[in-house]
Image (cartoon, rainbow, N blue to C red; front, top):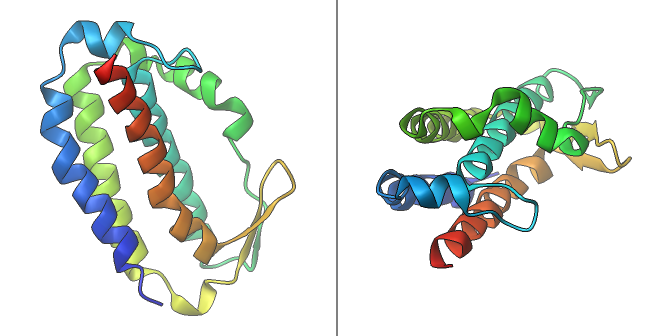
Length: 154
């Protein structure tokens, strides 16, 4: 299965957003908040957490038919708080987001095609295949970059 739409989409977001994020004023990234009360720094931090968790799942699903691996969805805000993204250097957050996603492109391109139907169970008891996980990854990035854009436009 070809996931080039996902990998090319991730790369386009990195190319489009890296400089845009770098150029944002400190006040914009630290004070404006979305409906979940997250700042732009915290939203980008959440995207790093998403990359980290999806990375683990995508790798583990290639050697487990059914994966029992914790979900962090119910703990998103706790992850953001414990890592203190709000007080982390902005350039570091941007670069970590960029390079983690460049690695995710490599992981997706290298995925074992025979394992795409392996299953992971979310905390909401939803079964997700490796294929669905990969296909949904880009949409999650898009969702949160749109939130950032809305905050920039305020």
